[in-house]
Amino acid sequence: MRVHNFTGGPAALPEAVLQRAASELLDFRGIGASVMEISHRSAEFSRIVEESEATLRRLMRIPDDYAVLFPQGGATGQFAAIVLNLVKSEAGEVPCYVDTGYWASRAVKEAKRYGDAVIVASSKAQNYRQIPDPSTWHVPDNAAFLHVTLNETIGGVEYQSDPPTDVTLVADASSNILSRPIDVSRYGVIYAGAQKNLGPSGIAITIVRKSLLGRGDRPIPTILDYTTLEQGRSMANTPPVFAWYIAGLVFDWVESEGGVEVMAKRNDRKAQRLYAFLDQSGFYQNKVANAFRSRMNVPFILQDESRTQAFLAAARDAGFIGLEGHRSVGGVRASLYNAIREASVEALVNFLDEFASSAP
Image (tube, rainbow, N blue to C red; front, side, top):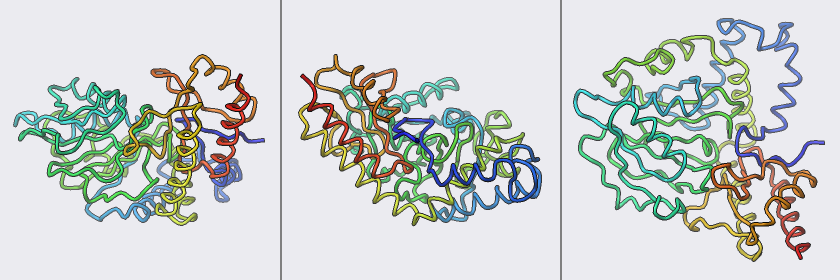
């Protein structure tokens, strides 16, 4: 029996994807071998490469003047890649960041390994419970790009629309890619680790405007070089073939379900159902400012925090996993990625209500 999986990442995959992968595991498309056992240069894997990119382009309406890359190293690898590929250091350019939480801060920390990095706005003083007002962002004239983290998985804050800026915009979309429409043309680069909404860990998606290729002026490790990856179909070395294959199946699933627009409506319903219950319960509390609440990650606490471990144990016994808050903050967190069914959210709400009602 499968559990209700609210893990933050690696996260739940659609059951239809898992079933298809299981049916093809020993014999991929009639070739008599697994997809993990064939050459990444083979005709069979080339079809996966072509089909997955084509489907992602349709889903996100990616313009022709953008390259779609499938690099290794997850989003953390892209923290360095964006700096090395986009910053003209000899011209005095600097990468700029809006600091909205744990992952934005990690991106800044990585950028500082290569020189200066400017934080143009931060919500740290508000305990990362909101997104700074764009009117307060102070972007310097020598900005190479402005980086935003579209959804913070730990703090549970999310941009509700594409951020406004005249500077080249770079977005970490790891935890909300394909969960709502994104106007790709507004961005220079969009990147995402796969292990939340796209597939297994180990691979990432990077969508980059082709005019930005080759812009950086420092040596770049081959596996992080956007130009090399674009020219070599993201295969500067052997790629994580199984992760790529599963990501392609997830793209197919999203399309078969009606696309990103359908995902957005479902995700809105799931999040609204859970937040509405938490707000009226009196037993649980979400502290994120309402206007910035994430649809993907809902962190909350019990008003009596001494009961948290008992709550988590009871949840596991009742068939709910992954509700532990991130180790850096504790508490509870429910991640509502695309693969989470509305029925699972309803079951969670019922469990939350029952646990609160049984409390002494």
